[in-house]
Length: 237
Ligand SMILES: *Cc1c(COP(=O)(O)O)cnc(C)c1O
Image (cartoon, rainbow, N blue to C red; front, top):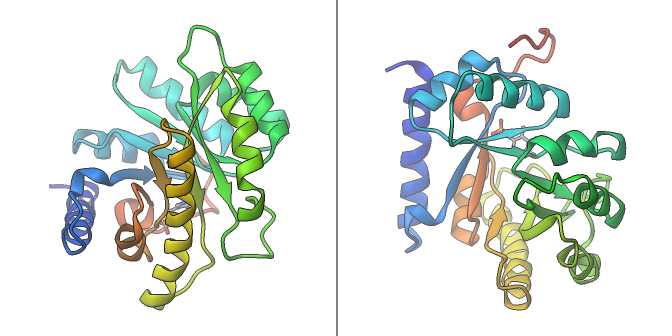
């Protein structure tokens, strides 16, 4: 077994253990493999080990990988855009990705909806909530969630699937859990208003267990699968 296959197996075991220990079924939690800065060869190892859903942060890098695997004839992959999105890059996301986790304003949502090609299914979107990091510019406060959700839900090119958050780094489990619970409460309220809502994207390598205990349905894991990232190297495929 290569390193990536081995790491993936370990992460899947941790997800199962975290789910079981709070009475949830492991299948309720989707593993998103965050492959930013990693070459296509690393993703290919993960694919060979059964991984299908990948998260990318940089639009062009993600599109290059999507096209690479499409041209290689690999079917059944699911591509999630999880990075900050500027208006001038929205078209590439709308035309290539299956999901966007970082919708945080109507302008971006409207552009993604308009730019989604008619022959593709609606783009799955999550609204990003700024749950704990007041200094970050990404995400909306919870107080603005209902208004934005109501607007996003009317856009024909999008399908509102839920919420995403990147909590401020925190090493204490109880504090990780408290923040994650705030997100889970907002998620449950949104689900009650919109039956199509089914996804809470929450939990990274360091807070995965607390996020799952609180109710996350999708964890985004990079380092624990692919190893540390090297941002100095050029991004080759
Ligand atoms: C990089 C990234 C991750 C993965 O982080 P790791 O600590 O490597 O697991 C998850 N979510 C987002 C939004 C990211 O940018």
